Amino acid sequence: MAPRCVQLLCTLAVFVAILAVYFPTRHARHYVYISPEDAVKEIVLNRQEKIPKNLPNCSYNQVLLTSKLIDINEIGDRQKGFITPKRGGEYEPSGCIPMIKSAIIIPYRNRSEQLNIFLNYMHKFLQQQNIHYKIIVVEQNDTLPFNRAKMINFGAQYALGLNYTCLILHDVDLIPLTTGNLYGCTYRPRHMSSSLDTFRYNLPYLTLFGGAISILSNQFQSINGMSNLFYGWGGEDDDFYKRLEAINLLPYRFAPELSKYTMLMHKKQQVVDNKRFDKLENSLENMSDGLSSLNRKYSVYLEDLYTKVVSF
Image (tube, rainbow, N blue to C red; front, top):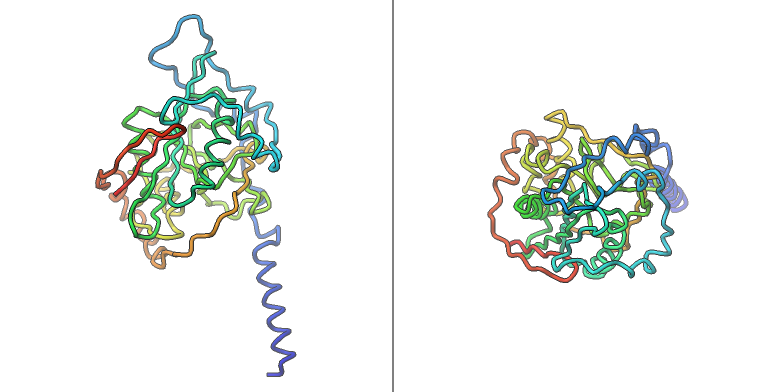
C-alpha cells in the first residue's frame, strides 16, 4: 500500500477514535434525574441520640436550593478557613443538631498530593453543610494491584462499627464544585458525581456507578458490600451496580446543577484487570464475597485531618 494511503488511513482512524470518545451524542445526555426541589424530600434525616438542649435541628433545604458553582481556579484558595476537626477527621456543627451522619470513605494508595488537596478542600466544603462527618482514608499496604472495592469494604466495616448510618464512597481525585451537593444519603443509592468535567459534564452511560457514591449503611450491608475480587483497573463499579440491581435498588442521580465535579490531575492506573469481564459474568454468583469475607486485618491511626485505616 502506498505511503500516502497508509497516512490517510491512520488519520481517518484517529478521527474516528476522537469522535467515539468526545462526540456529545455518545453520552447519556438526557438521563432522568431529581430536581433540587424534589431532592429536599429524598434526603434521609436522623436525629442524634444525645440531643443538646436549646439547639434547633440543622436544616438542609437551603443547602440544596441555593447551590452555588465553585470556580475550579478557586480550589487552592478554599484550602483554608475551616474549623479544625477532632483528631481523626471528625466534625459536628455546634450551632444546631446535625440530622445527617456520614462517613466519607476514601480508597487510597500513593496519592499524597491529591489527598492533601482533598482533605483541606473537603473539610471546609462539608462544614458549610452542617453535617456530622468523619473522613476515613483506607490505604492498601501490599504489593498487589490496587483493589479499590476491597479498601471501600474495609472503610465501611470500620464506619459501621462507629454507627455511621450513611456511607459516602469517594475517589480521592474528585472535587465537588456545587455547594448544594449534600453529603448525606437518600432513600436510594445516589451517584453523586454524574456531572464530571473530564466527560464534559455529560454522563458516559446510564449504568455508570463510580467516583462518588452515597448509600445507606443498611443498604450496603444488604448486598454484602462490594466484591473483593477486582484487582487493578475496571469492573468493580459495574459489579456493584449489578448487586443493587439484583435487589431492585437501582441508583439515581440529582440534577446536574447539584452534581458537578472536577478531577484532579494524576497518573492513570496502568494495571488492568484482564479477567474483569469474566468476573462480571458471575457477579450474582459471587455475592457471598464482600463484607462478610474480609480478613479483618487492618490497623487504625487517628491523624489530624482524617482517620487512616491500613489493610494488610
